Length: 454
Image (cartoon, rainbow, N blue to C red; front, side, top):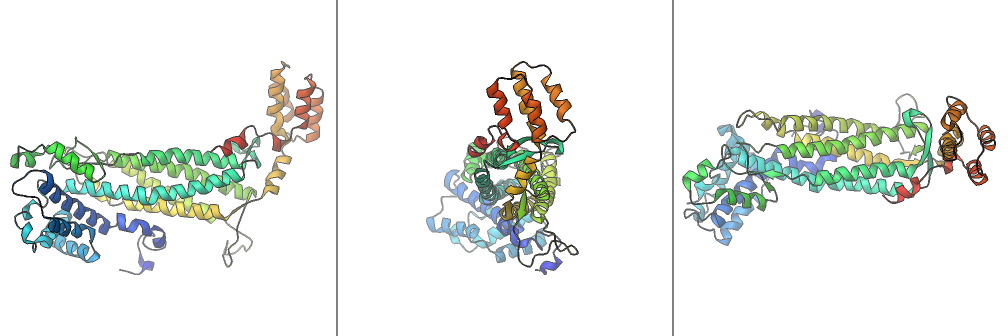
């Protein structure tokens, strides 16, 4: 393998260590291993359940030997398939020949050799292999990584549920919230998208060249092939798709791409907000010895983790958007444009994983500067205008909104100027006193409760 410094993609160079968990899944090795697995399982299923006289049930030892071809698949095996492919110029046919080569020395399989890849088109094998890859990437890597980030954010939401913070709608001072509630918003949004990612049915088919079991039926018309195919697909842990052309139409890949893209978009939103709060001084970042923030300005501690996350989520989302727009489209019963696109699935998941890693690292460095947050609140008494005009509305005072607009819009309001305004209002004493006692930091509604309930 070439030196990492010569890698064309940063996934195999600069970021290689961060995507290691995806390498056994989305690499060409991972695709080959799953293709072999599907072919072997199909052969075993034919012997076990189809009732085909020419493929009698295999003895236990033979079944174990077959299973080992997939379970013990090695780099050397992958290299052998590539060597065969040099002659066939067809990757799936090379897998078929590899398996036939491996079982050639097992006498009990001599009669069954030509039932490797029986009645299958390449896409019967490919669609199942890719579905298995997506399932493994989702369940073993993506969801656990999302869950770890969500747990960390949930802990922050609970820890700072009561920390008041100035809101900034349209970038302007607005009704206060709490730091915990703003983090809780992200946790809630992520949870919804996480469920949608997890609930995408990953579909599979094994119904022949154009989806009609043509070859199956002409060879063995007595077999209920749709029922057999359904049992086989479900035995792999996938959902059976009964209606396809030569290809499984990839709608489920579009669905998981769109769901993951929405999750990534939520986290882009979060990364930008935290970037802004660091700029405002609401968060400080833990210093790392020896780290440089700027090549010329020694004082800087840049929010690089959040910037890196935003950039990598953006790359991933561009790919996911292409997958969902392109993959469900195929001319007539099949064209080959999906083949090269499917090979980029790992790239999108890789950039997502890098972004999640950067975001988690950035969140772990954050330190809340409560003094800075409180100072911003104490300089923003105009945000209580909403509270005052709402109490005035309740008690029927004239033009409450307009009066507060005249007092506060575009003007600096102090605690004293607001006190003078409140004291002359014809309000019940209890309500007037409540307004006089109110501070920006105390005007947070149910934010604390909402943050703690996440």
